[in-house]
Image (tube, rainbow, N blue to C red; front, side, top):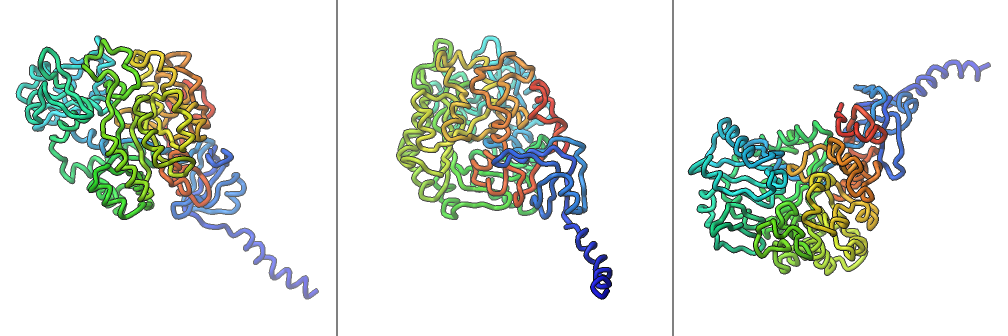
Length: 539
């Protein structure tokens, strides 16, 4: 009887203890959660506390064990890890929003002039700047000439950057200021000449000479640019970006804004390869803060395919139409001594080397340099950014030296209408994502924005469909190299995280990781392919 009485007295306390729930900050339930863990498992609900996932499980388990200050009923919607862009120019994109005319999609040189005139009337300044022109969209598809700029904007400093960032059109006033004329020579660069005069089109290192003259932005403008870029990126589901090539001041500004809570997006910052910047960061070692990662250096092997600066092993197939003189195979932009110097510094400091290489000649050249340092299997995760055209014998070297391709699947869909004209039969080795993926079992995906649209949904669609947003061509482009939907999702989440060494805390929805996630209005893993581009971010 005494034992029974004791049980009756303790029973309410036992029941209260059993029913006590752990309090968390947020519960998301009634969801279709893609965790993107190693098993690519799914869940119905998740609990979050102090910015971390503390539980990811089925609905009943989460709702019975946790209570929250805020609860989100996902109403069956799809939830994914926060999308990550593996290669972008986040800072440059923001600067474009603040003071550059948008020339993307212009179907003619005249449309370029029209947009510049509107921008100039709204935002008058000493320099008239624009970005995004692409002569491949014009008829005829020829490089522009600055004589038209002189007519429309007499006496003005005008500098217009091509869509790929590797060519500019400069007014005569800018050429004079830069000291560039028909006789100007610079290794890794070129000034196009026609009828005995410089046309104003400058490629790669020569373009950089003109761009270096642009007056710097004020600190207030830089902050405005970063915050505007963040706003736009988060609106399309990006929670992390890689900024490919930054100086000391910009990285320190990003860090200060993150410390102040103004910049909440995670930035993987690649440092510029000048000695001052490398010494500043590599002396400190790897920087791995909550919102900022610094452990890589960005270099360039060649230019871009669209502006014919990409280094090819054999001449461009449309050489007769390009009008670029002796640069029939494109250009390697730096000396081998420079590449070895950067690689040595990075190797000693435990930094990644991330080299822009687009043509098969550029890719081969950098693989040759990398092989001197990597020698064989490793986990240094040195990267080749873009890896657009690869010679047959060089695919295996990505696996041999564990070099990771960092691709942009929207480059494929932007280029596919004209790339075969540049490459001829070599097109079969271009944008070969499945072939590259097989070498290491993973690759990194991004946009290179502002060159492409910032949307990771478009990146995903381009990876799986290899079509324009309007669904053309109906059969897709070289579909043997399309990614599966699972591969495509991994390529904008966990593989990007792995590409910047933060896979232990980002890239998937798992207990202990940062609670970065995105909720969409439809499930991009199952909807009809043609519905993917119109997907909207809910939260």
